[in-house]
Length: 127
Image 1: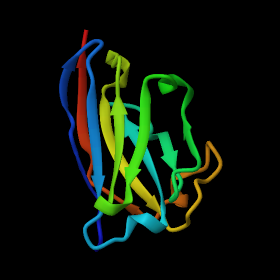
Image 2: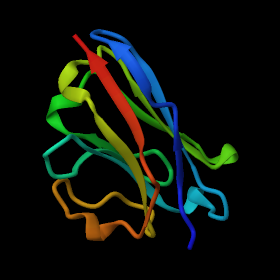
Image 3: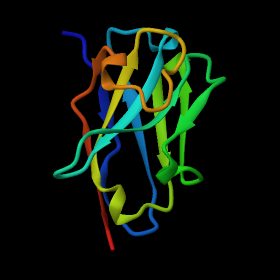
Image 4: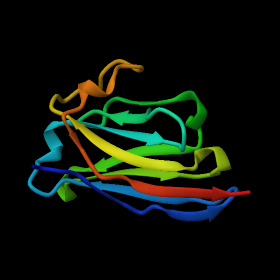
């Protein structure tokens, strides 16, 4: 089964930065909107951000606005999530997911909107 591949997770201190990457071997991500999700221990998975295929539309959950930036390089078949000013509450497993449409779903739409997922990468922020 085709699967996305996340990388770039790790452990950082409060206020640190990480850049996550989502690569699509076997996919042409350029045609699809890509979302980033996260799941903290004991919590449900939540959407963090989404970017349309042409990068003309992005959105972020309120808790990361102004700190996280989603971007994509379609020539490299890769989507990025730059995470700055990290907080302990950002600790989670981060997943990328591909929506087989060029636009992002409405904010708050369910995971069913996304057809392909990665295995996730752990981000741990210590205080």
